[in-house]
Image 1 (cartoon, rainbow, N blue to C red):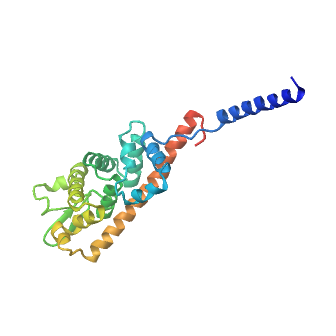
Image 2 (image 1 turned 180 degrees about the vertical axis):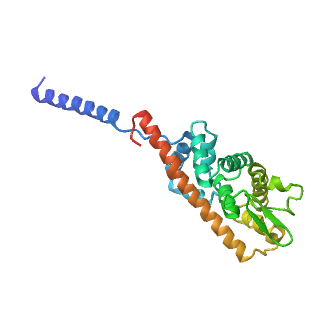
Image 3 (image 1 turned 135 degrees about the vertical axis):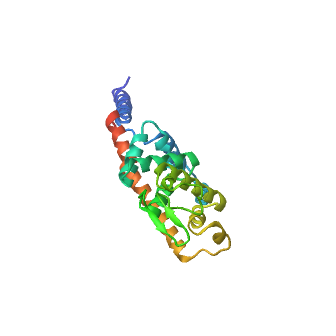
Length: 235
């Protein structure tokens, strides 16, 4: 065999070995959560022709609910909303009812914040009726509830989130549902939504967006870092 051929073969073998070492030593991406990662991979692999369809798809995964249902991350979710609301009882009540009724978790918390600032003893006298508790349940809308039940976070969250789910089902979207929750089904159906209700909707949707951003930073990112330390991988 000619000396030059030996050199070529040696270079080819050396290149292959270095390539294999490079691949094996390359940091592997750390999974945040299997369900969330699969959705990111699906979106990343879309073709240009698929993009308009994604824009028109108004359904989105509730990332908070996914992590709440997972035994490995549920406590972190509860801890985050306990810190946000200042009450573990409120956090657990809203998380449980939102998950049970299929209501977007961030929307449920945003609504409770707008209605009561997460204060279970919140009270508002409307003249002919009163609003009480976490979701400001109205005495005329819920005539069978006793006064102390309005101020119980579990009872209030159960009825408040169920009513929000009813509004979502009837209205078909979050904007119309929030208008219905605030102004009533009849008024919204007659196209009589007042500006004060439009402002109310705007604030809640902003709160929802802020909650999701905080959750991503304080729960999702921290969980990713925790997994990276546990596996010895770069986040």
